[in-house]
Length: 340
Ligand SMILES: Cc1cc2nc3c(=O)[nH]c(=O)nc-3n(C[C@H](O)[C@H](O)[C@H](O)COP(=O)(O)OP(=O)(O)OC[C@H]3O[C@@H](n4cnc5c(N)ncnc54)[C@H](O)[C@@H]3O)c2cc1C
Image 1 (cartoon, rainbow, N blue to C red):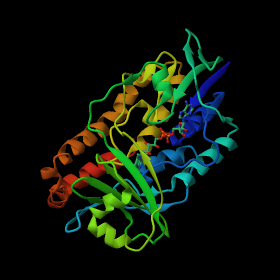
Image 2 (image 1 turned 90 degrees about the vertical axis):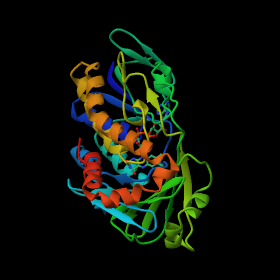
Image 3 (image 1 turned 90 degrees about the horizontal axis):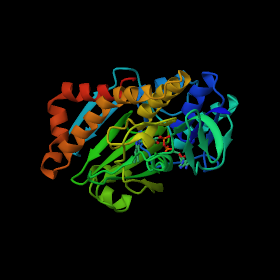
Image 4 (image 1 turned 135 degrees about the vertical axis):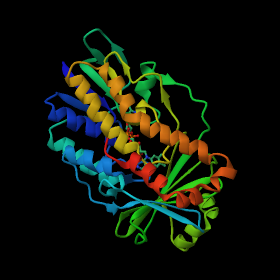
């Protein structure tokens, strides 16, 4: 019988496989999508994510990120990272680096989804095959979360994400966040000649329409084409608990508040490490408390920022507030960016 099956070969599942291999577990990854996997993402690795990737020997090339800059076209507020730089990394580059490391560690990646899960006292059957534990790292709309009855409804306002790239030299080493009445656009340098543009909004529509509401950004990008767009959402997802018997939820599969604080990958990597430690210790239930400890600070700040920026009247003041209270802005950015 295997020690561990990881459902999902995204960044969190692959990092979990690396932590498991380092702990001496017999682990396999199940990922239905072949080749190099792309996804709608702002592609900003916060300093905590860079540190955790380093722990499992993964150092993907990208563009250094020195902080976060808010702008509404007229005003600018900037907060620098205090715990070392982050990094803008194309999702395809991140996936290639993680997958290569998993293959070098001798962990098999099977090209099929997890379709059925049956729990027993001392094992879990994954599509009929016994394994001691199953980690669900199968993303925002996690099929495994549903299969084991951990999906929870949400009444939160629905927000969606879009992402494209523009072939041009970055004009800042910060992740630049442009605020309009209905959307935020995150500009992340990912290479010397490429920037990523991610837009988050509760309004659905093509990326070009959102950019029309962000004239200062549209002016920067004028005359350049947007390289293929990808979408994701609704972003808010909840789970009832993170552990059900021998099944543990990690990354977006464990629940997601919003992408506006850019912490998804850092948080997911920290959860992968904690979940593997719990199964290695033979104490999966302990992961629930570790998950709460790892996520509460980030979730609280994300909920607070969402609440403060939902009413259009308040939204207009977000950049002015950040510029007027630079220490508060810097403290909030660094609470989110610091390693777990
Ligand atoms: C618009 C947007 C911008 C974002 N910006 C940032 C950012 O700047 N920085 C940041 O850190 N985070 C950001 N995030 C969040 C980040 O993208 C996610 O937190 C991260 O991708 C989570 O990784 P994961 O491995 O948990 O899930 P995923 O990357 O979604 O991977 C899940 C994998 O599971 C596979 N799968 C699905 N079903 C099954 C099944 N049944 N069996 C097996 N495998 C299955 C899928 O094919 C997929 O490859 C952003 C998100 C969005 C939407």
